[in-house]
Length: 243
Image (tube, rainbow, N blue to C red; front, side, top):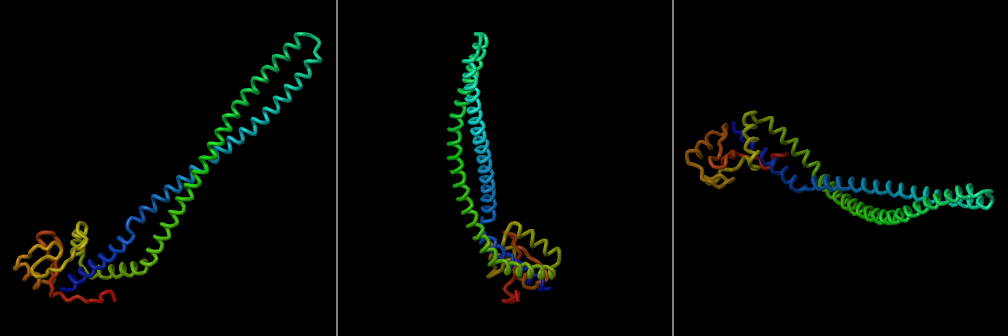
């Protein structure tokens, strides 16, 4: 029956239109995925830097308190030195004061390093936040672009897919499998045989095959060169087959 071949032509034309929609999106889906991954990575980096900065500042506060405590302790020990009754006690306090001063100098040195580290972290965090904002801006632009294209196409795509399913029900499983096999390699799986040539690869079609193609509309014939499914000019197609 000629209906099967006719519906394969319709299915092929629908697939071509769906391919065009896919091309309109281009690499947008993959670009969005990459940008989202970069954005999440940047957020994680900012959070990690903020955590390190908090730890550094906490250490600085604790160190400052430790210095104040050591200073108070040294002052108290110095006051005691003037009230000692023997050299042994004086020497013991002196030794303790020296130990406190060593600890004080050590913490002071660490605080200088921490101060430099804090400055570097602040600068790094500022750069990371700026980069995050730039990625976020890029992400929003791409999402808007994707949403605009998708929303414009969404209803038509649904309609095309619905019509395609309807036509597929009118084609035998074997013919549909043949169509899918060809389309796996060639997007335009069903093409017109015009002026004794395949309009897919422009190879000549033997006259005998043209006759068979015209007289056997209930069978599928393939181009011997490219493998596409052929249909003759005599096949009557509806221009508004979507409606």
